[in-house]
Image (cartoon, rainbow over all chains, first blue to last red; front, side):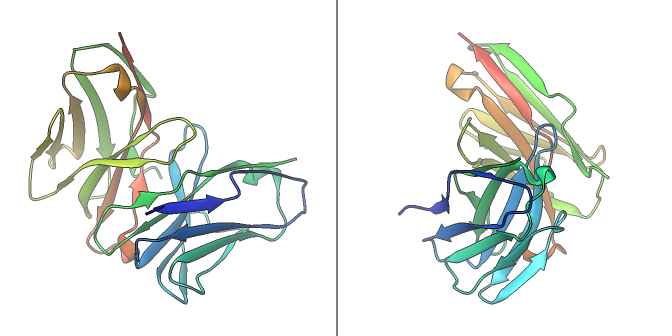
Length: 111
Length: 114
């Protein structure tokens, strides 16, 4: 089992560009999450999904969109990247009431 | 409003001694608490958890203590090993929380010196 995988691992964008981060899990988990980690701020929830075709806002959703068209995939989109979105992004998955499993992260720099 | 706080950004201990990492929370609706460990360039990995119906949970060298009245939990690692050097995140969730959402603390960098 690969667990939770994220692509790409690194990306540099210019302000205003768009991109999509892909998260895939092979554990048949119902729930999936996108977090960002910034120095001194821990992990903050951007969006999450409790099932295929459903998404919900987390703590810091502005500037991001998500889609969960397939149970195993959770996409995070940035329509117009801003320097404030420079961060490390982590995807996670879990079953209801169970601990979350995290991917290795995507380091994004917006110039 | 930081609902989960880890007031110590860093902690340094000698190999073989005890490491104690602390976490405070403000939301009385939290009823499940977890500790995650994170190495550089990797995602966090689950370490140990505790439900609010308990005040202690032990797993090998790791023990988590929960003091509900003080809204405080701590992670004890004994004996500490150099491989324990990592960032430790405290996290919390509530029964009413949709999607088993977690609220994380800022993290504490633990360094275990040989």
